[in-house]
Image 1: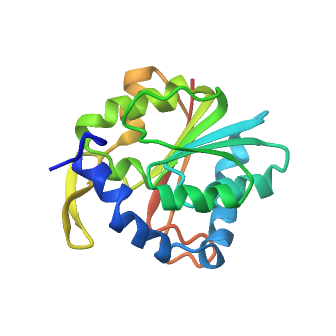
Image 2: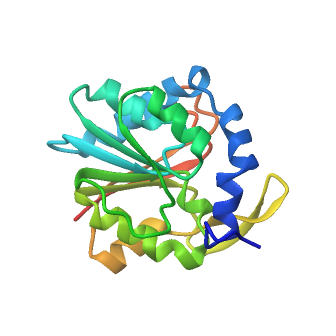
Length: 206
């Protein structure tokens, strides 16, 4: 069951206690250096990047990494969990809104929009809206850094069912919105420098 505030159980999941617990497992001291290394790779094929917006920014570590790599960049974040959004705001590197990304968003158009470990937790029935949010709010680039599978699959997530979905998110964006593949890569969990839990990233261009 979901409340009137959210349309899917996945949103309730991340907005509530589980989302709060997730914050405790993902602290800056452990993750900032890997995120700096990861974004250094992703940005190598981006040109003229002056602004970026993250859909599902959690406590803002990706935004913090981008602010350090590109000190003059203008940043926005959207986060469903109020506690996480408050932590992201404390970093003072981005304008952060508390909202769900499964409803239409009107952000300041950014050179780059992105998700990182977020699409995998979206109810598949709501993916189209999230895709449109990524594309419509981007002036040029879209990045998705997610678990990859060529076919849509659902797997158990920390003992919870229907909370993690793998598929070819980038391929769907390319096909549905006529985006161009610019670059892609893989962050292996055992890489001590860029430990990102077996994430595949794709840089797409409008």
